[in-house]
Image (cartoon, rainbow, N blue to C red):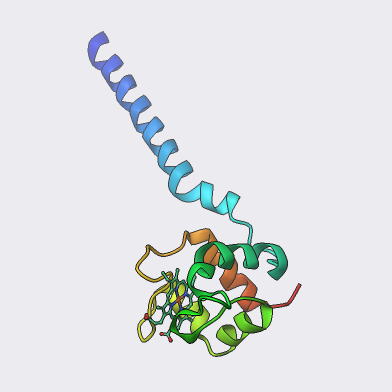
Amino acid sequence: MLKSSSLLFLLSLTWLATACYYDVEEELYPTLECLTDNVNYSEEVLSIITTNCYSCHNAASNFGNITLEGYAALKVQVDNGKLLKVIRHEAGVSPMPKNQPQMVACDIAKIEAWVAAGAPNN
Ligand code: HEC
């Protein structure tokens, strides 16, 4: 009798620990850490694009005849709809960053929020 109730106790502890672990890793963490309010160009967007895209798309490298250097150049790709399509790996465009995994979800979410806000030059 004692044995089986302690086993049950241990099992429920394990279940609780597992449940908390998955809450933190898969649901709570990204929501708490990825802030998409008032995303600005000058710090957040510029830094994401510089890190992930400038190696091929600054004014000098200009791969595929596309530069993303500077607000005006990036805005062209916002307005023609390609920026979001390439980073979301949607059909009909070449997925970016080329030959690399998709950018981390939070970076994509920030760019999406910035575009949804009208892609301000702030
Ligand atoms: C390793 C080089 C490389 C990186 C890094 C890269 N690109 Fe590209 N990109 C290319 C090349 C080359 C093309 C021309 C099309 C092709 O060959 O796939 C291209 C094409 C594009 C196009 C036009 C796509 C189309 O189908 O018309 C857009 C928009 C674009 N890139 C945006 C980005 C963005 C945004 C990033 C960063 C998230 C990025 N690229 C990172 C190499 C790169």
